Image (cartoon, rainbow, N blue to C red):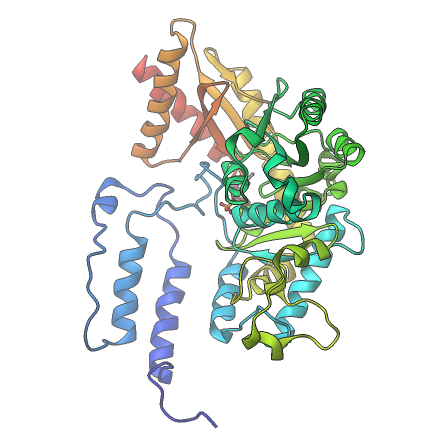
Amino acid sequence: MFDRPSRLKASESEIDAALARLRAELLRPPPGPAATRPERAAVSPHVGVPARGRPLDEALDHMLALAGAGADRVDHPRFHAFVPGPAALASRIGDMAAATLNLQAGSPRQSPGAAAIERTLIRWLADAAGLPPEAGGLFLSGGSMANLAAVVAAREDRLSESERPRGVAYVTAETHPSVTRALRIAGLSRDRIRTVATDDRFRMAPGALEAAIARDHATGLRPFLIVATAGATATGAIDPLPDIAHIAERCGLWLHVDGALGATAALSPARRALLDGIGRADSLAWDGHKWLFQTYGCGMLLVRREAALTDAFRLDAGYLHDLAQDDGAPNFWDMGPETSRPARALKLWLTLQTLGLDEIAAAVDRACAHAETVDRRIAAMAGWRRGAPASLGVATFRCAPESLDDHAADALNAALAADMRAEGFAVVGEARLNGRRFLRLCALHPETTDDDLGDTLDRLVVHAARRL
Ligand SMILES: Cc1ncc(COP(=O)(O)O)c(C=O)c1O
């Protein structure tokens, strides 16, 4: 039917050339975890838009050079900062496949196969988390969007319009900032967001939470949402989910668990117990592009009661009426903030099919063990101390010899992170704990070895000795 030549498609030879270029990119090992100074200096995005188009392979070559210049190699086994991004080949290919099919995944009527894959995966993830059979959810671009959609669903579910100005939400200082941003977007003023105290392991203190809720009730406010974290970004800490779930259930508050980083531990039989209580959440954010080896743009939101999402997000647009489902089941655009959306579930499906559950569980176990090894090594290093106990692949520590006061130690540790980056052997992150600067190592890459970590610590010691 549409077999006439198209400028939007390409000739066979153009496709071959473009795929060959991408193939070369996939085969090229990252030269190191950090971009070098000349690479960063080479960034020059000042390229205008031509009046007449140029050949695809030429433009693609140019684009790859531009886009790759100066970029962090977040998928290098010694990239230990932030949350690394070790995307599996299957995810990269799945991403390309989704783009190649160019599915509009907003409605099962427009892409029934992709919708079935998304629904299957959501069901499977909900089961893995221990959510009930009526649980549902959808794919979003990442943890920030999942947190936002959860906060909006909680607000709609627990507060009437007239109660909204009195609604109060509970977080901790370790909660990811995307949650506070989500609360602000959802209309909460800063004085309606309580920062609950944490214990000596940076976990929400249930007693302090309970007391704060009681205080707010007593002053006529409407506590409605607790945000707990399973895998805090700075420390990997897991809030005491059973205790918090108990308080949420008893006080009638919505419990959202931000498991963007840590929920994947539910897939490891050896580590699953760490997340006990997670299945009691009303909603759960879980990122594919953190510990499930996905390319960026892959987050999931699971909800205990799927109707909570449609209550919050249902879309009534005349031009979409003919895409309503015969059985009245919701479209994905009725369950979240997006209307047109890519088929993000495809790449996770392909990854799970090719890696298999055992390999993912082994990667979780290895990452946890790596961080614990770092902890043990730090304990044996004179002048160094741990920040928080290693948790879910994250270790925190700082060089703090007695000769330095806290401020000087802060400056030293910031300088050490910069030294490592400049050297280019490994990238180590930073964390602020109790107002002090710590180094942070997030060992989620499945190919990171004991030697990688040992050598990284050895180099830190060398840099510290040079600076002291
Ligand atoms: C615990 C946690 N929640 C949420 C986010 C935000 O996720 P995203 O960057 O996918 O939006 C992060 C990011 O690191 C995180 O660690």
